[in-house]
Image (cartoon, rainbow, N blue to C red; front, side, top):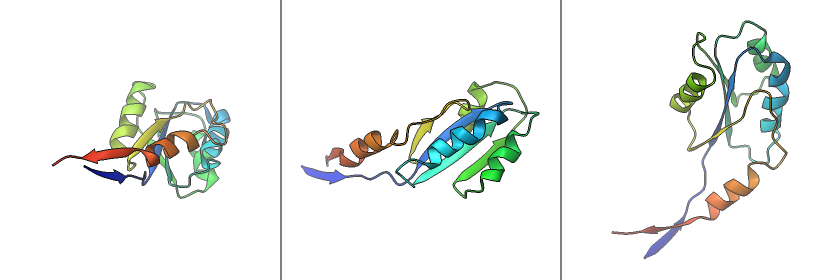
Length: 121
């Protein structure tokens, strides 16, 4: 039996949103403050009429992608759209009004990195 260690190449954090511009900057910045820099943040808007897009774009980090479509299924459709648009090997979700503690991703990513998988012929 051969054992190999796998490291996460990139993790996508999907943040579905609808008219929560007042919370978005804190939510996105809490992800950017994580100890892992192998992140893609995908903010999936469901037709906001406030300045959510300007808030997110104003953060100015290349790891953030804005994905907007017309309103229709909050938060289910934006979450599913985020999964389809994801470039990451792993996916996590963050609600647009929430914030992560500084090392939220550290333990799960360490566990995944240390995971030993068998290679069966």
